[in-house]
Length: 189
Image (cartoon, rainbow, N blue to C red; front, side):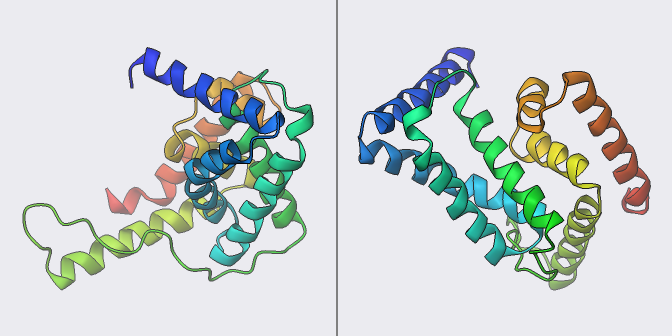
């Protein structure tokens, strides 16, 4: 993404939240529609249960709305948003709220030039499931760091702010997580 475009998107999100602060509910609707899907996806990967992820996402946006009066654009809007989501997910995991066996978000297979055979589709789905399970088995902070880095494409500095640690701690978390994933998924290579 062009840095000018990225900068504009960041400023636009903060501007929308400032409008919400000033009492503009339509701006909140824009933020909700823009980030609801990514937040649910992130939370689902954290808690491994679609229903719980949707409940937590509702709580995330409720907290965002309740905090509108004190909102200050000191950090990127997405950093603030995913900090709230991460804390709620970690609390839910600690409290034992999510139950295993939630619905998958990654249903279906992308069709390129030709349709894959049923066998190819099953193999691909099996591999994706193994990757999902390996990520889900990581310690909570490592899992959160991987999900923000790989799936939300957040920078180390943003992840550090979300997790409340240094960038070097994030790099260390990611290094350990990726080493663990490489070892667990070596048979797929």
